[in-house]
Amino acid sequence: MNLKNARIIFIGTSFFAKELLKNLIEKEIEIRLVITQPDKPAGRKKELKPSEVKIFAQKNKLKIEQFSKLDSQALTKIKTLEPDLIIVAAYGMIIPLEILAQPQFGCINIHTSLLPKLRGSCPIQTALLQGLEETGITMMKMNIGIDSGDLIFQEKIKIDSQDTYPVLENKLIEATNQILIPTLNNYLKEKIKPKPQNHSQASWTKIIKKTDGKIDWTDSAEKIYNQFKAFYLWPQIHTFWTINGKTKKIILNEISKSEISEKNRQSGEVYQKNNQTLIQTTQGSIVLKKIQLEGKNKLSIKDFLNGNPKLIHNVLK
Image (cartoon, rainbow, N blue to C red):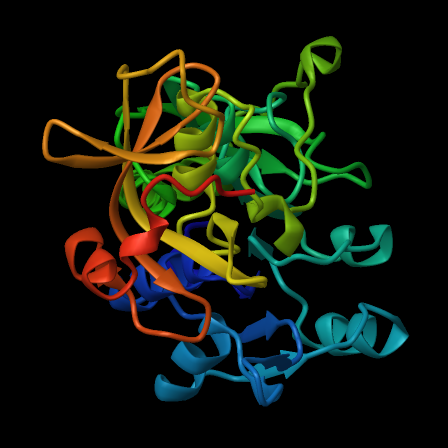
């Protein structure tokens, strides 16, 4: 058996998942059903927004199901399709054992880390937060545990020092799409025997909250820069500026780190040196390039200071 004649269900939600589904469709792999999370409220008006996977599936006239939970209704739907294989990528919900047991060849998950390292929902952000020099992709046969299934394939991906979340995600997408179809074909032909993970080496990610974007200026410049790269899309890193008795939230859209540090300055103090605008940390400084007041447009630091010159020598919190 190969992917061309297999009955396949695809389960996923995120941009990463959408790009894998897109690749499968472009390579003329038939997907019998797409399962993605329900539409969720987004933005200030909290209007319902479909997932990236749903948007793509609708444009390509694929059958879609959105379950608030994978219960008996979902199980019945999946059973009627008699899938040979279920492909899972960044779905964001636990898949129960009853569904995992349905396909002849099981459920294959694509995870964006080198398992058993960085199990959980945020492996890309966590790799960047930890300042890792490499991460990777893992294809595994799912079991009832979280990212603990037997390994089918792994590939290492280098993390460059300036990689932000979208840059690293695109590297992982490109690498996955190069190996996904040939690896799954070899698996379906039983040329690959899944191997157990070394569970003693497992590490975990944590769920990211909006408050995680708050900068602590007593951290080092390197740690803050890692935070910026990890949270580039969401929740973005931010700080607070108090002026004339009012506190304003400032989002840092583009920054770099510098070894420049001045002993007589406080952590969080904004200053200028060598034609740069910097913020002092406990070790090194952050170089400001683009920032914005919450609810306003992002601006180059030069344009921002033209309208807000009092930012210089202020201490941000």
